[in-house]
Image 1 (cartoon, rainbow, N blue to C red):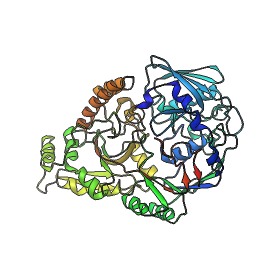
Image 2 (spheres, rainbow, N blue to C red):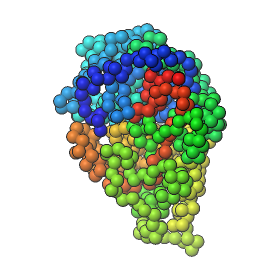
Image 3 (spheres, rainbow, N blue to C red):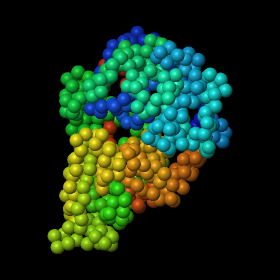
Image 4 (spheres, rainbow, N blue to C red):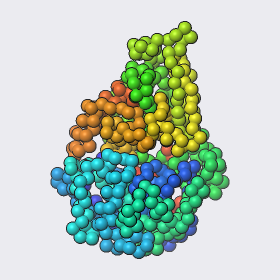
Length: 524
């Protein structure tokens, strides 16, 4: 990936990209209405992952860097940077005109505080695990030191991953995960919070003292929560909202594509890497056996899921890393559907069918949202597994927190799940597989309780390797083992699409899409 080239020249070339354009500035103003069914608990991405927090959070908080649609790092709070030759430190040179929304200047002390906060509190433990110290030789220089080379570091300083939060507010000794400022944040991004009504709306207003001249173009952003996807899609079709950042329902995608006033695109998700999978609790009495997990994989027809259930919009998934990534392993075992092989594996594992053809009974959980990717696929899996003697009961959850508590608490046998790669495997893939990240109570950690010491070694080596070709080879070896061990059945890549009104100029189509600052978005 191009972001591996830590060149100072990149930041200097981007000056023209970040300077205000007169033609657009003349059209500045107006209110952008964004819709979503995902409801944010709070607005601080430093201690919370996910779309619901990331979309508003990246408007409120600025990060050291931002990335364009070609995976090139661009200056943001850091106007330039250098990476040490050994890859074990990055020096950030901060803008001298950047202030928080309360007028306090942003200094290297805020960067150091933010890095430590994210390292200690963000669920992506591997993201800044190599950080040892952050030196602050002066107010505008921050030197982030690593115990080993960290090729994912620059990417981890963008999007919603490293919001620079004010030390003078969050450093007051309160529990930062429950800090009242999480719902009334003071950031330094292009927009400031005006009102947050959880489950209803988030209203952001223009930051008049934003550090990029003549930005943002918009006066206001309103993020409206809808109870269901149908009403949200209807609102977009009727022109009541200007943007749906993350839409997966294939029927709704097809419907909105027919509206001449809307643009529907699959661009803006390059760094997201969304995977839909079926995961196992490997401590479960049945799924602690690898052959049982492999049998389930052979019983499921991914082509049917993609073509029949998703109308060809999604793509089959082969492993932990999406196929669009240079680190993907397209040559791993695809587990093409084979019911006879599934039955044989179950026999070998010691689970013979009784007189009624039943081997065992088990529950299957799913996220109570994204019905087409979750409930619908679960409903397909149920009769498929019955064909090989596994009786499945679908277990629904009343809401997302209930599902997350159950799966995060390892109180499940099988569950559907949607997990992101987050650009670099160090950020979004390692967390699922390393033995040290088996943590109860933390969703999107190693909830499968999967542990393979050889995988740990390969991921550790890949996470510190600066040579791209060598990194690719290490990740391919790790994925071959993971796919064979089958802690998950990899089903499909999500067909995320962004929908926006044709009156929206400069829609957010970088690698982070709507999980990136919208200071250059405008209304025509």
